[in-house]
Image 1 (tube, rainbow, N blue to C red):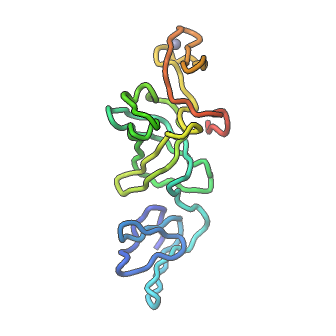
Image 2 (image 1 turned 60 degrees about the vertical axis):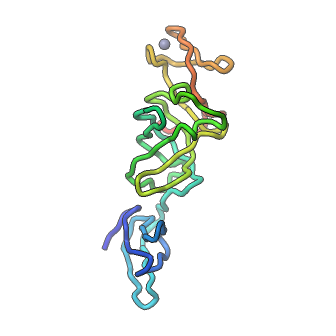
Image 3 (image 1 turned 135 degrees about the vertical axis):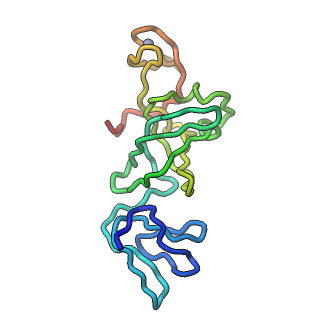
Length: 182
Ligand SMILES: [Zn+2]
C-alpha cells in the first residue's frame, strides 16, 4: 500500500515502527512517501521510499500568520527551512506563551495577520503542530503596514511606515533577511 507522511500505519502493540516511520502515543505513522511493508515475523512495519523525512520538533519553518485570537494564532502555508523535509497537512498553531520569554499581553503587538514568520517546531500532536518564536533569531521576517500595506522600516524598537508614518510593533527576527521564501 502506498502511504504519505503522517498517515497512520498500525498500533505499537501490533507492530514496531521501522525506517520511514515515527511513533506517537502508541501509534505508528509514516514519515515519508512510499510503500508500506509489514514484516510479520519480526512484527516490524516500515516504509520503503525515497527521502522526504517528516519535520521534527526543533526544525525551523516559515509560515504566514492566518487568524489571530486572544491566546493563539493559526499559521498557514508552512515551508520547512530544510527543503528535503515534508510538512504534514495539518493545522499549525502559535500560542501567546510562545511569543516571548517575558509576559505577552496581546498577540497583536508581536504578530499581525499576513506576516511571514520564521518559527521553530516545538510539538507535533494529532490536533496540529505547535510553533515558537521565543528566540531572538525567530519571529517576523516580512511584514507590511496594517494601514496602507506599505513597507515598514525598523527604527530602534519600532517599525515606522514610510508612506503613512504609522508606528507599529512586531517581534522581528534578528538577521531576518536570510533565506526568506517568496
Ligand atoms: Zn502605512
